[in-house]
Amino acid sequence: MALSTNRIVYGVHSITPYARADKLPFGILKVIGGGAISLSAEFEDLFGGSNKFAWASEAKTISSEFTATVKSMPDFMFELYLGATVSTTAAAALGTVRQAITNVKGTSMVASTGIASVGIKAASEADLKDGIYVVKAVTATTYDVFIMTDIAFDKGADVTYEDDLLKITATPITLVQSAAADIPNFGLEITGDSGVIALVTDDTAFFSVSAAHGGISEITIGKTSTTFPQHGLVALSQKRADDSLFEIEIFKAVGAGFPISLEETVFAIPELTTKLLYDEVEDAIAKITASAGA
Image 1: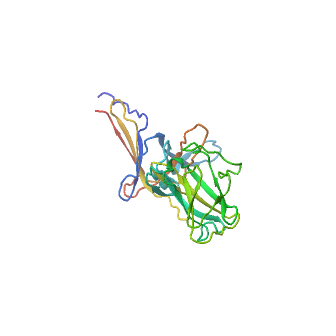
Image 2: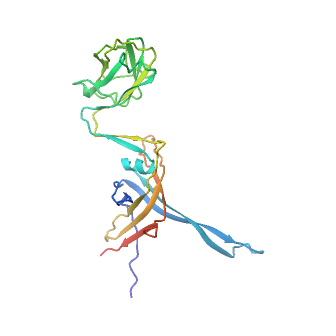
Image 3: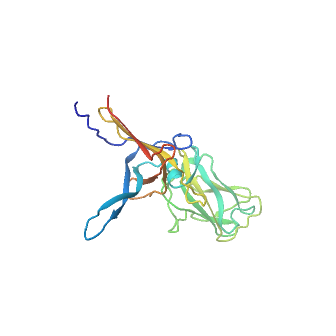
């Protein structure tokens, strides 16, 4: 009988987490750097007498992990591994005020005698600039506007900051009762409410804007109700030239946490770590299916 063909594993193709309740996939990770399953044992050694070496050793517990480096970050990854909640906004060719204006300091900015709403000015959508905006009362009827970033200052009309405090209004804007006033060159307008305007100096409010976009995910991390769902995983090697495949299915896994780095001229590549747990139904933690090419 001739020797069997050597089993050789090459590359990585995909990692797919799935719900244990119905085995339906959460989605697929395909832009990945690699994945590895690791089983490491803790040993109990028996020493005695003058012998410097162990007379016996037995494996006690085995730590089982699956690690993967991933180069894309779909919503489900945050839900499974950061316990996050994700809310989505559909694509909007004209932009979105994604966070309605909300009081921060004091209560006079968003009130019946203050601001009613922030909206996108008709026919000025091209001037929208992405960011978190802060509105600060200067007098009882005027306010200045600040923005947290200049990343979109080249969209539409070019703008610059007015000072080092990130103010974008050259002069304070007057809030008009039941009428809208523009934030110049930003594609936005702020409408006063129905009462006689009565802002309190130095009170603030904020809102956030996204210019034309293909969809938005807002990912909230760290709620008191955070859980890290148990799930299954299927990982596949790259298909080799002879059509051989190597598949790992992990029946019961739980993961918690991964880093998100923002580095100069570098893609973010988080590393996921999941613990492999014993599955009572399968009587196993994982199964490898190695199929040889035909």
